[in-house]
Amino acid sequence: MNVSVSPKAAAVRADVTAAVVQATQRIRFDDIPARTIATTKRVLLDTLAVAWAAADAAGVNAARALALRGAPGHASLWGEGETRREPSAAAFYNGTLAAALDFDSLAGFVHADIIVAPAALAVAEQQRRNGRELLAALTVGNELVVRLAAATRTNRGFFHTSIAGVFGAALAAARLRGLDADRTHNALGIALCHAGGTQQSHVEQRLTKRLQSAFAARDGIISADLAALGTTGPRAAFEGPFGLFALFEEGRPEEVLDGLGRRFLVDETALKRFPACGCSHAALAAALEIVARHGITGEDVARGEIVLTPYMARLVGGAFAPEANPQVTGQFNVRYGVAAVLARGGFGLADIEPAAVLDPAIRPLVERLSVRVDESRTGTFAPADVTIETHDGRRLHHRVEAVPGSSEAPLSEDEIHAKLVAAFGYGRNALPPARIEALVQRIHRLEGVDDISTLFDQVL
Image (cartoon, rainbow, N blue to C red; front, side, top):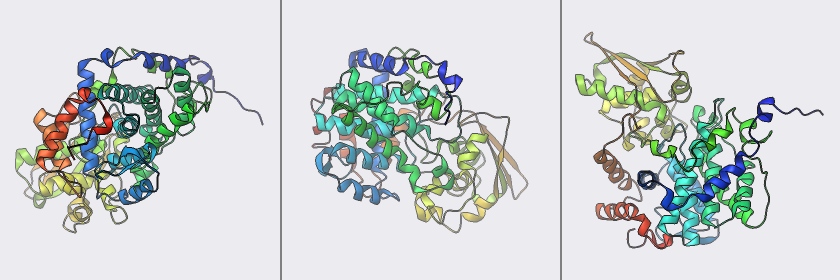
């Protein structure tokens, strides 16, 4: 059999992976700008909060049962009190929690934190690292995920979050394990052999959507563990003829190096306003504005149209068929989301509960809404238009150009704090206000924590 190498791959710089290792090994806590450290803390808090709220989400019990089969260890299962397991098992469970409500942050078009945070925190607890070391590892790991995604030029349906995320988890875990450059390089090569992810789970609205990040968090740790034990991996994980960019999506791997260590793309991380796929957020915000301006309710709506870009429609523009996985449908159906805003005046955690999605009163309104794809638009998360025609003849329209929570339309500090309080206080593992505030303050002062294994002590 003859095997040909893509000419695109052949033209790529030959040492991208090695250069990434060298550059990230040089980054110390004191080299990271204060703004970026503040972003890392904010994103870590957001990740913990949305994970805490997910204890009752569909699929979480299975992930918990699997994690509990793992060997006892030093890594916390978030929200489970004193229960600890070995890091890869804990990262799998915590990664499932972090993704389950689709309320986690976005950096570019990937969810770096739901993979890197579970992996890094688990290894930091095991290794008893301090807060400065954890913050540096989180920042560097997240930054690699965002840069790998930003260097991509195509989107054929792979799930970039988990594909790029396993490398960020491996890098953070290797750093917290104290691996040298050679073994860190091997960890990234081993991670290539784990890399995977598909949007098929999104479009079919299956529970595996929330597991792909968990696989990546777990496998990033395993990659670093194997490298620590002397296992070798491919050296050209990113740029090789059968490496990340050649096999998954076309891109420019050398762009990963542009400003690495000097400019941090994670500073643009967006915190989600709604517990739903980011492709719905502009439409949800548009519907909220219509409700706020005109005071309409669902009963006033004769029909409505939602205009999305092709990418957005691919993920959230499908049929409303909630019976199999109602919570996932609630997160990935823009017509349901807009209907919930019109009928209930907002879209929060209660609106993705199965009972809310299956509420017979909401379906007729969902069916009066339609999605139209504007093929001329190229955005990933915006713009979106919502037009509502009322029974009394009014035609109400609003367009949102910037995703709520993004750098163009950031959440206020009050909105961020309200989200933390609501999420930490939701579900089976809800925390009382005093403990929420104690945990928030502990993360704000994380660089002063001497031993991450004590992070949750006297707080939870």
